[in-house]
Length: 232
Image (cartoon, helix red, strand yellow):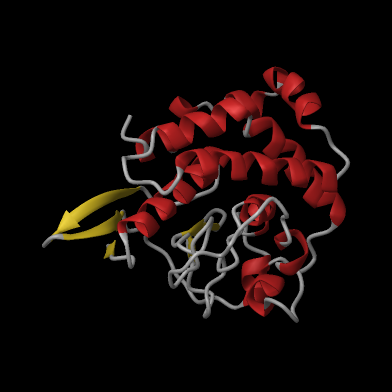
């Protein structure tokens, strides 16, 4: 599948968001920047499954609520999609668990889903807006029932995963043309710090303990889909 964002900058922003999700451990398709007929686009590996499930069904599907904190960090206000079409569920009608994939993360980071800059800053308002049906009824539906304890558990894992070095490495590995790489690196770090403070946690405290966490070691770029996303 190939999509053509409104500019190469927007395409690269989406690829960066995709790589950050992959590094976190979320299910996202492999993507790469392509040029076809003189147009820059994003080629995405097709994942077999179903989109368009309703919010209630998605809220109970593994892999939907698990990445709320990462969705908030990346300002992915369109994580659900207008018809819940940005979340694809695999394994329906088959033995074993279902899993939700974020198949379109074009609404993440600095650009809006339809183009144009959001004016994003260090304040992670998505920690509340994604849960508020009066602001975003689609995301509120998929995150319904996600309580403070579950959110804080996600934050601990998130902080231990996304060190300064990890953020720097992922941004540095992007193809040329990313809009203001230094700006987005700092923005990601500032928004991470906002989340830590919002949950009463310290970034350095978490980082000191990450070596002892098996799940964190498994998130090394060579042991996750990020290696494939980065062409390694």
